[in-house]
Length: 140
Image (cartoon, rainbow, N blue to C red; front, top):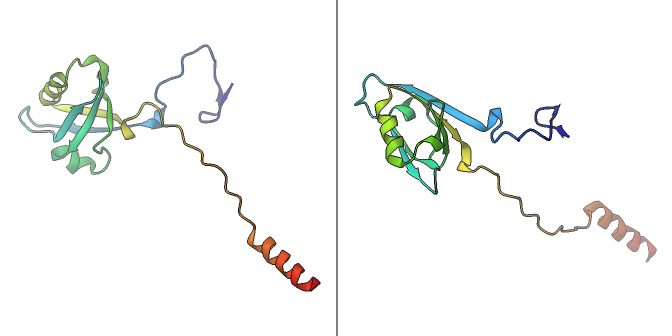
């Protein structure tokens, strides 16, 4: 089958990658020492899913709006987030590391929700309605 996003034919036997290249955003900060706060507040929702709750400190100064509250964390320093068993481990890792690269997925969702299609509303074309009214007036 043909993938219109990558403009290439894809092998249906291979698994579909979870993320395309442009789906992820990342931000990197370099701390001087371990005691410097990074400014990220992380929360856990569900099993193994961690989200940004607040952005402040160094991340806010350096990256402004690149990472927002509600983004789902996918990787920390290239390590998949699933390898962190608890929120404590994530916060401990963020505290101990001097260079932190956070990869996030916007909206925090694996899959985009299906769009609900409403019933079509047919409206008369204004020019066609005006032409029909003019034709009716001409017949009188």
